[in-house]
Image 1: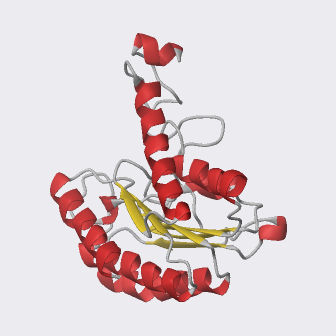
Image 2: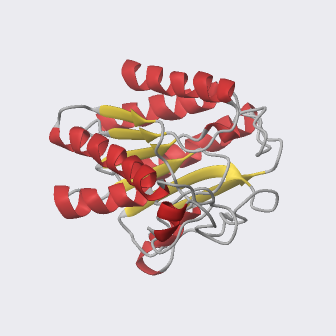
Length: 245
């Protein structure tokens, strides 16, 4: 709160700057994702898209990577504590590894995690190795698919069936899709070369799977993306897939 009032300094070790009202702004992001999740669980909507959501780097106790609060993780906790939804799938196609979600639920066998991202050898946060599959009772419930810098649609389409099969195996009751557009070719920060067709496919096939499982619940969250044209094209494709599926 102090940083939010004074509007200066950092909320972490140098990636997440403070500005006046940062607490309130970040709380609105979380609130937006929670409202969308509540609409879906209550049956008011089958799908929802929250473009300002998907802040997947923040940890339970600190900000990180431009993310003040991790709305993805808050949604998971909300669904469990308030809505009696236990088995939740988190799917991430952002260029960056969703480390804040992974480590918050690394030992949780009911959080099914599937993440395709640029290798941590070339991109922040440096995590998300293929060997990271969960710990303890959660071993095998997490899937990380790191791709080399420069990977494009061919590599995505080769990897995607693995992610979908992994998620399907656990028959989750709710889907959270983090569809960051920084994995699209031309992003100034990341190095993947996807087209919007990758995100459209992910959204469409997750919706179809959710329908086959009998609940249809898919919450899509925007995530990263630092080229406005990419954001517009990619998130429009995601919304079209959510509506059409």
